[in-house]
Length: 187
Image (cartoon, rainbow, N blue to C red):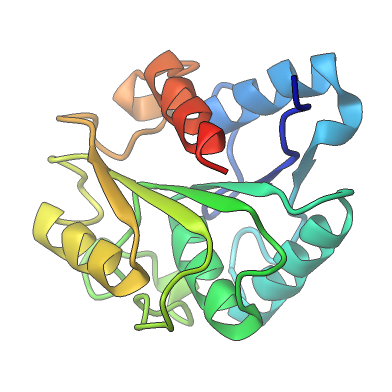
């Protein structure tokens, strides 16, 4: 059996706290294989700078020994979309994008004003899934579906899970982990 691909964790603004599904997955995966997971480490968690986040993604991807699967939440979706648009797809095997925020929505953090909505790219050469909640307070379903279209991503609707974070009550989000497993089987 093939060893699972490494993961690069790309949280949203302020990073993901220890109870967030990304952190729980990272802890779980690291316990099995410490080199299998890398989390981005931008200097600008609180006042995110797109260039800083792009460098942090590049650094994290370079730190693993083969093209990883990006495990992404919230503002990280916008950062990864921009990064993929600049870098191309050869460096990653897949992208699991969860709960994109809408940078044009009134609730978008002013501190992240430099981040923009995804733009059309060449046909994606990487398997991409965009996971959306029907009642995400940071992005309407219609906008999320439009983002998926622009990114060439497969859409997975997960019902009413808010922003798919700690406040949503998803905990370790085993259903999300199953979605990642499904994605990885296609790689």
